[in-house]
Image (cartoon, one colour):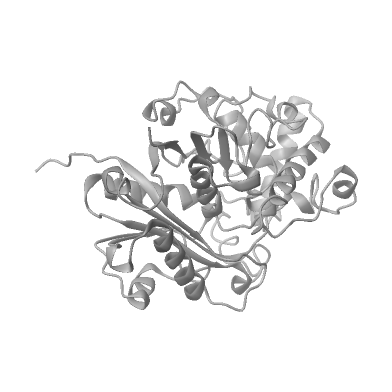
Length: 390
């Protein structure tokens, strides 16, 4: 029997807990609160949930089967990826696809994250960073690089040298994220960050300073996904999942650099990519996007996403984003809740929740006027577009 028919999909509930650098609560406890907040937001009960999707499991979080058992969920479809922020988009997309095809009716995208319980990321004790060959995460131990930040700094230095741009301009990114976070009551970093404050911060891996690195955090998040038809009968305005494209992989892909930059196994020739996410969402291109939520584990990620998805030309994004262009009130508000750099590193789920708030018109002082189209995008090439229910 053929698959189908494909059903339209929407986000109907969001839940996010208090965020901190070190919580006394377990990942299971954080996930439980996030799920309940999401259910309350949507006007659903735990018995309605029959799909469970996450990008994280033990030891950073709790494995999907333990979550289902602990919460008494009866799950018909579940997906758990390798514990990494790059799989937030694919996990949400898997949930959307499951609902669209009818293998689940209400899918919970759920994560209770405890970075403080994980210990140090990078260094000699990081098993992932020291896996065979170092992998494409940025940890290349045969070069003495045993943390993701080293890979990010290497890619950014290569970018600046190739295009003749001043690496000091990157300060505009963490300063913009901090200004947004100061309007977010749930953000961790609300102390002002201006140019002098940034310049006074130490280099972690030159040319990146401390504010250029994400806040590894503890917290829980939940997004509930169901059909548009059902969503229209629930408590909140439906936020439509309008378009998607998948995570890219191959020799020309490096997690912290656009294809063709010449890092690790990449070639040296940049290319214009096709991005089906826009056509699928009924958009003409990036110019139709009202707000961009992106995976900002390191400040240069913002530069690379802007170029990869066509918001700025090759070698131009670092200068393009200056003078408040990515801030609220600017041409393209980016990471309006503060992002991984100033709200919290919850692998990107916080960005998804913020996308929903923006389209609902519930972002408070951070609200982008007339926001109807929000894009999630990563330097790894995946993307999802959310739109207002029209």
